[in-house]
Length: 320
Image 1 (cartoon, rainbow, N blue to C red):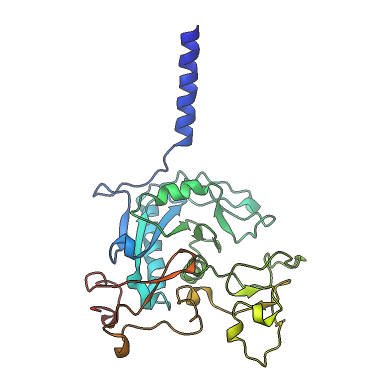
Image 2: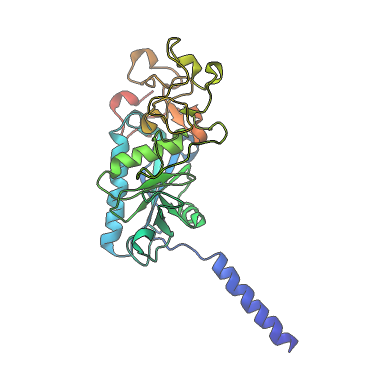
């Protein structure tokens, strides 16, 4: 009896172990790897590594091709949007093809529930605005991303054409027609740690309470009314009244009016200047002349070689 009990307990333990460590299903490529390099500009240690994973894409060739194209479109958005365009050599971009049982993601307001690998959903318009996309189990998202060599940012593209996106510990975007603009916007939040500057959260006419919490950590908004303590006080014209009150979110008395995607990778203290470009003759021959964004908005400098910049960079950004 004791032996049977031990076997039973071992079986239960094994089931629990399998449930806890169940692997996210991902595509294995022809080379045997579970990831693909979309843009590889050098060793992971010296680059900002973005890993794209998908949710709601089935194993069908059509769905996986759709995901691959969406990743290519996201990279194209970066290639054509300052400041990413000028700093593309600072990035490595990886792709992990996740396989879901069903196409699409959850829509709580429409009672649509999909069996997807990363458990992504739109907001319920109660706890989150409907446009907010997130995973109810982000451990699965990171499990998928971990197949890539390294990740500084993890970006989930969901197989759904309704407008939406979000940025927290993970970045999300749908395949709606404005996807390219949303990609650079949401990535700007993550890289630059910048807040949205909307005057509302749900923006559907409901009365929304004014913000009453502590000073915000984002660099572009503040509750501070003391001019000398405002984060960007050195940039405020002496004639500008403080606090400013035009179009501010309720409870927020000032904001920098920064575009998240345009400001995300600019060096600290230079947020109103374009980053130095390597095409500037005065900068050539210097150890490096382009900032690289790191997690938390921290800027470091890297050196690029011709081999590293062989794709996606203009000639004047090579051979430095």
